Length: 110
Length: 115
Image 1: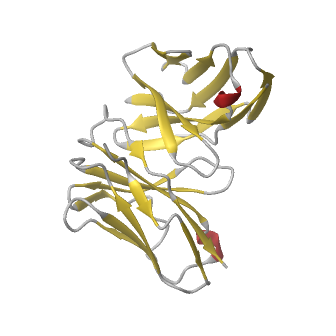
Image 2: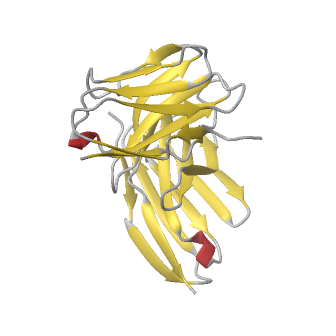
């Protein structure tokens, strides 16, 4: 069974600091990895999807890397803003089924 | 265009009652998924539909849980004889084809509270 772990569970940083969120998974036979954002009481918003053949994806201030062989992904958020405060979830796909980590809750202090 | 919608947004029920949760996927998406998110945890897979059929229901916790998608669009998750442990947010997602390269688009969820 795929196990996904996210460290740290919570993170608080001052505005402008770069954020580094980590995700690890036990079964490297994945099809892709996604990073999601979840605001309190809301659903999930997909931020980035990295196919298993790719090493990284970038969107604006967000960059995600994938090292499939070591079972790790890192999400970087540059120049954090208070609006980045949310829970960030990592999910790996074994075909259609997503396996999620418990998330990292980020607070960006103004 | 419209995203995935779920109704109701909140449902409070008493232990032992029957509940139905509805999901309206993005128009044209053939794949539909249900996940359950307990407090402080990530979502857990429940069931996957490809068209009208349940292609994988291995995540359903027991036979009190059942889901249908009769016309290949709207889906209903049904829970019989609810228990307090069923309290969670139930998330629905859809994707265009259901393949491994698809992005799944999630709805806002239904928060179920069993008293």
